[in-house]
Image (cartoon, rainbow, N blue to C red; front, side):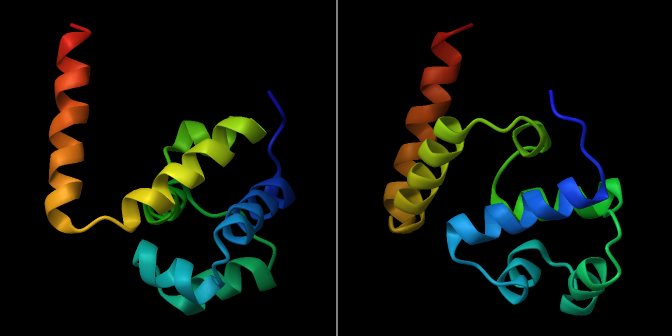
Length: 108
């Protein structure tokens, strides 16, 4: 596993934003973090706190473990899946969640 420094964390966030074609502003809206906080984090080159990073991951719709466990193919597939899900209407999203929950239950 790669050693994550401040620069690595900020670079990883930038990488994830780039793959989604998101700006810092969009990340702010999706994560609920004030834009000024995100902007300052990059301007000052400071690592986000754990709670802030959790909000960033929630906004990006990835887990913290996914954030720190980088595998090109996995993230590419996850991003494609997330984009496809975002395009579904609420009814189809609910159907998908029901299906996923059934799949998870069948593993128990």
